[in-house]
Image 1 (tube, one colour):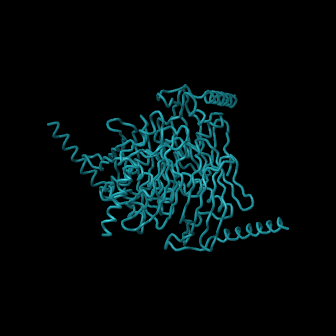
Image 2: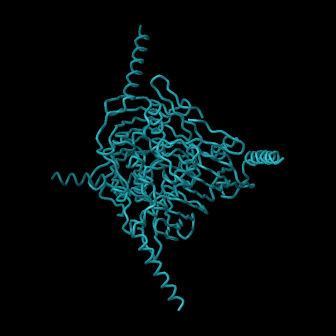
Image 3: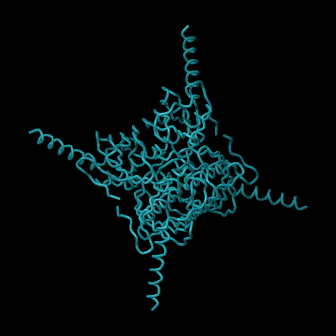
Length: 154
Length: 154
Length: 154
Length: 154
């Protein structure tokens, strides 16, 4: 199985389909793509230096929570498929972000997701500032993208 | 635990939250509300006389598949909560339907879902006519609703 | 769907099989019977007055944890099956219990489970005294059983 | 994340713990270790050339089914843990095998599993001969082990 990696502002994460993911219709159960997407988001932020368990412990335990989720199911995945979840940040604020996540089998797009995630305190459920690594990375890759666009335009 | 029931065009289905549904954040894991919603849809169509396993066997095995899903997570459910999934058909065609599903704890709306479901042949993945019970029921309850609206307007 | 109930020292708990429980082999995925069993144990202790969420909150959060599990898979369950989990306490000590759980479809035994559960503090992971309702109930039903046996022998 | 690999007769498979695997007790839910074990068995047989989806299609669809499972839960895994499932075949016959699977976090054994798996036809539920790669591999590694033992004894 290939490893996860970044390509510019996109994060590529491989997922293998096991029996646990499928249902009696012979395909991946619709809710389980959301698990694949969450694994990809977790590895995304881990790759930026944000360990979620560390944030769960400590004085003010915090966690990412999903506020909104949209999923377009275009074609089903089946047992043994090797999928790739391609994630990119579409929008980011001080306390939340919108992640676009597309799930592919080779070049075929199977499921297109858009997930809004907030960062909250588990004690008082109030929004917290996102771990700074996220905004820093977004700014850096967005700046790089703009620069590339400018170059391309010259 | 109370039983499921219809009230006019709405189907009420109770769900208890168990350890399996929760995660280390202390709340129900976001993908698991989609399981609750699917249980509710299954009991909804079963109550109308549509058994899904029967449709999986036979010469032309058919199944409901989710094409699109939107979820608004407003407030979290926790262990031991007794939830109610309230489902109603928003739109229906010959081969698909849109179901609005709201998940409540008592009067508090926790998650609002909108699910588009198609009915397909598992062999050729082509759309099939919905089981006739669904259109018949929708027509009957929609007619009743219109009649009620007329009465109310008088 | 029938409700759960006690019959002497046995607790009967109904479980419906949904798509989420099945896999591409067309049967219930082997790990999911353990979810059914846990739901049954939860309702068993709830019926005796032990709410698990209440025990998770408070000064010394406690939880039941499974120490050992054995499962004999005799025959598979399929989509739409209505199963019954029959649970009884085989052994009980101050800090743990062994529960025998048989999962039936009508009269056919599908899966036979034996689960050892301890009660622990989540803070220090040390064994805690079981909620007193459990030992009290076990003593009462065991006494009743012995009395019945004596009567029968007379 | 490290890749899976063989060391003599043992197969090492890494598993990362995500939110989906944990519960409100803050640890991995007991049934989910069985999912980790199944992923490891799947990659084990895939590494020997046995693709399960290929066996599900075709004229006589076959699948591995678990007949018996024992699990000793010694210590809990938590969010973000990187676990290793170490699998080895303890016994093998023409139609079934017993796999010993130990789940570690670094050197600490968390869960010890013993799983009996049969190979069956999904049509008539009858036992089928195991894919020949399995017996061949077992014989080869067992022979190598015996030879090593002999050498050691000299």
